Image (cartoon, rainbow, N blue to C red; front, side, top):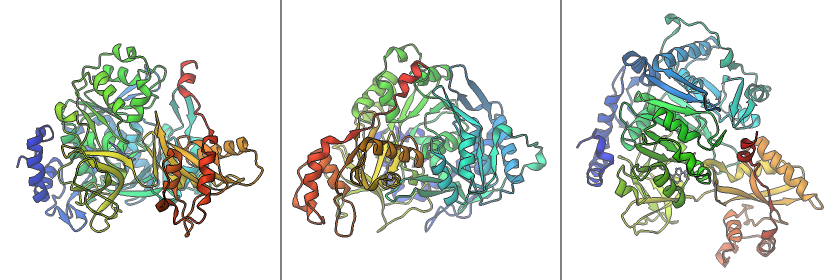
Length: 613
Ligand code: WTA
């Protein structure tokens, strides 16, 4: 077995051989991978029941920062670009270490100890990354909340996770607008009585005696992150420190075939899992330079990504389909005026990469030279699970293969594996892997991902999207139930049901069926609904359509049948198996007749506003 061979992800024969060898002996593979870590105590056990690397002791922060600061102190760890073309900073590994120690010291002065939860509400600044690492340095657990979420959403997460402090900065500048963050944090913490650490005002003095690393063991938690599931409240996902780090770092090493001098640019936000695994932990673990951007890709012009790639000579560019689709609309000259030939590998994550976006990315960005790593994974999985190979020919199938050690199955509704090609079922995972979250749920020894998928004629996996009650808007996971609870707060609304429908730019958007009190002013109620989703979740959670109906289709136990609403929306034939459990089947006809009367709620056109500020 060539367990550390870099081109293992580039050659189909080598891949198959390794994949099968590793399937027989997963432990040998991970035993080899953990040599990349600097251990205080090397583990003797790889997997013991659900526990990975049981007796291992190491520090995430030391592995991501200190060791590189020792060997290569001036190397840039983070290059930051801000809202305007001229805004740029460079943070070396040594600078990063100093800042981390300063933040960690301030946290300790606030009596933050091992196992305490620290909220982080920050724009994409180097300090956001430093804050995460400062927590890991003292074995506190970070809980990052996307700074685009409302103060209500922030407050709910701080309360639920029992956070002891919140780290923030005064303001955020994005797309030519200034957003006051501290005010949001003050509102969010008003009833919680937790201290605010504003990094713009941090003057904590540091000397070596203040600094002490708290080492992590297998069961120690690195972070909590909230995502959406099928319930009305956000779902807390907990990741371990060392096993998670090893999984993120190993997948990164193979799938992006990293080289020491790579300049890596990922356009995600640290508020999402991608920002944790593949902006912060994996790139820094390997001592690379990670480029971050806190502005908007279309402000002042829609060439910000290409400008950054040219200026920094980016070699690996990891982005999301929604970003690609929104940039595809602009004049190609915005790309052509930049030399982006440094690019070697492209990546995509977050939602299905549709054919037109794939072609555009492949031809216009990669100039037919760069493979596109269309990586499939989830907050729960900690790191990439499925990706195409780094091989231009293979890549054109646009389907992926499971990472080493990942055993997948596609099953029909009765749990029967589907092996024939082009036949969709639910994607499930049968193996355990180091990146799995602590609170993962295996049922009948399988983890159900909630995603639909099928094998293509080469036996490679294609992902079609969620099969459960989760909508993926511009790569942001939002539960239908979360939408509904926000909509139901509206005075005149009795109840509601939300479904995901296709959207050209956002991938999916929300369509809300609303039962309201009689004789209401519909337009005004729609406005109140939009205010409530914005206030309780955030601006991304906006239904594009609202339809007032008399009643919702429910089964006898009162559960709303959203699949039926989706069928009505798509104008698909309804048969008796769809209706026999309904309390009131007549409602179908009523909704079918009304569906075209849905009220459209347009987006505020930011792009235009940006161009003429
Ligand atoms: C979707 C993001 C198709 C999928 C890392 C998954 C994808 C959900 C892809 C997880 C992809 C992610 N192709 N769909 N390459 N990547 N998804 O937890 O529905 O924010 O279940 O994690 O995004 O979203 P999450």
